[in-house]
View (cartoon, rainbow, N blue to C red):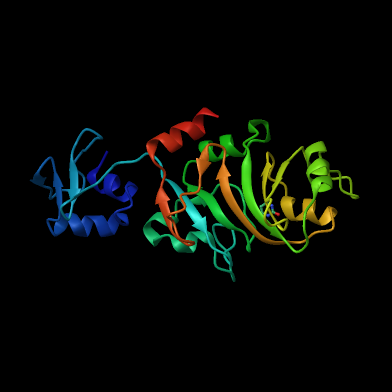
Length: 233
Ligand code: URA
């Protein structure tokens, strides 16, 4: 592959920006200063930019600790999206895996790998998602039972069995595990039991847990083992 494409794919900059970096002599291939943006490189070559190694990746996989107030979309004419947290040279390729409501916080996967997204989101895949939730009224064993049996709303919407674990110290707090991702699912489930969700945070998706060292609005790339384990499911 051409050196300028290699650098652009690694999100060092746009094609024209990386050409400038090469022109300025800031790019080295196998220790030698590169001058030709069209020179051929492959993933066995050592490429450095500004003295830092450039890792070639086929795809990007980020975990974001989503903050409140951003919508889960790639673009929106009026509202800020989760992709606004990413630098311009990377964000143009990326999209979120699934959806969290504007006021929901916590784990959101962001990638440019369509097949991976499809695999994780396929209803047949049954990936468990865990959320921490707070409600306006205390929850009880009847709620646990109703969710365990699978709830059917008055409009006929049926939700699969979900595990509700109420905090013994504070009955307005619980962790819920669901295996689907229907629109406003958790809020609608609780509402059907007469309770309003006032805080919702996604803790995990399948084997992937939110890295609690990430502050809201921060993201990091997935580690190799995290990605491997997600693919295994
Ligand atoms: N369920 C909801 O109600 N909202 C979310 O953001 C995710 C699950």
